[in-house]
Length: 116
Image (tube, rainbow, N blue to C red):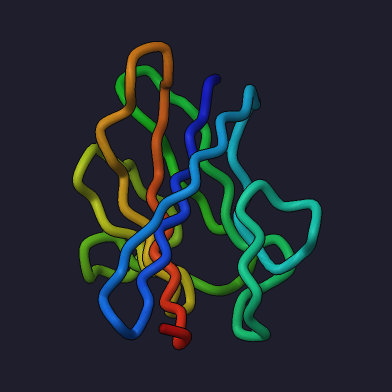
């Protein structure tokens, strides 16, 4: 699976920048541990929190911990995600975005930055 992670940084002054990373993976992992595909720096995030895997018509997100996550404002432990869906992972916002050609899954991670 070709995966695109777009990290979007917004400064307090409203300036937006993004950095894209493309990886070839069997699945995407999200958590606090440094070996996770999406490494979230927050003590409220379990070391290994979520796994996203391809399924027949989309992607499944499954909690690997006892904690849930939100998809479009609804608490879940297991969900199917589609383009436009918004995931809230312990306060971190991920959005499923339209993938470019040759990319299977694209996620945007919005990071706030206090510097100008």
